[in-house]
Image 1 (cartoon, rainbow, N blue to C red):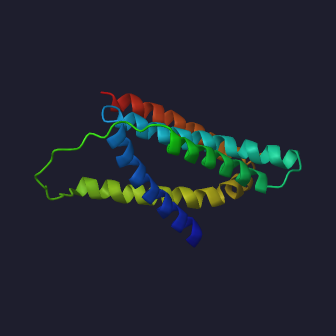
Image 2 (image 1 turned 60 degrees about the horizontal axis):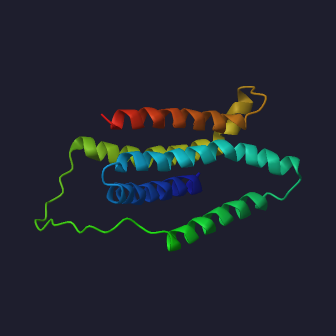
Length: 162
């Protein structure tokens, strides 16, 4: 559980770096770009149980999934090195503003950290919970959960365009 909490916190720190980057790179559509990042993660979560089942059925070592993931990350890194970034437009803000945190913003920050941590804990327990409830194939719980996330992301994208 401690490792799940730590990985959830690490995921939250990663989110706090991705969101401002998306907002800065895609000035007009930063929210949509951030939602696309979450969509990509959800699609991968949906496909993971199928990948595990494929590896198990083919009697391949489970390290195959890690090697495939590493190959995808390497391709992504190569794309980052060689593909162009949008032109840099310096900000002309000369006045420094003091940060002001409202109670709602503090609540949202805390929610961001706790939801990721809770999700990591849930990932460790969901299949056992499904077995306790008598599900024939508890590995599908994560896929169903990911479908729910994808639907929520589409609703969020639609709402953010207003």
